[in-house]
Length: 160
Image (cartoon, rainbow, N blue to C red; front, side):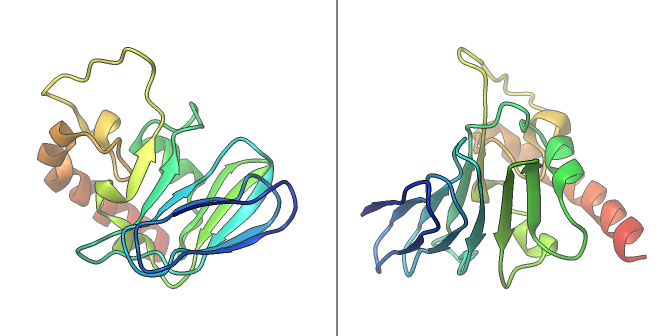
């Protein structure tokens, strides 16, 4: 099912299937329910709280593809709040993922980021291109081990 809100504050609650949740602005609460759900964060101003991001075998995905300023691990690290999964996209957009830690969110399949039109990714994509919250590109899987090393370093800096 596809559930869409409006510019007001909305609570969108999915069912057992693979739902698409798009709050479309305002302060929204998104609950995907069972299944592989996708939460879309669009350009409309507002804060989004995701109540039940599933990181299991059938996992959810956060679509940030509307934001050309977020294309890499570095871009997201700059916007992450330490100790929680809070992504400050810009002054008018914030995403909170409840009941998860940054360490639980290591799988690049959990995120879909902006890519320029006509971007032909090579088979040798690097950490800057594939990062922690990656483009959902198959060639990025090869860089996960090097990414984990960077994340362990960052976690040590934040949590000392």
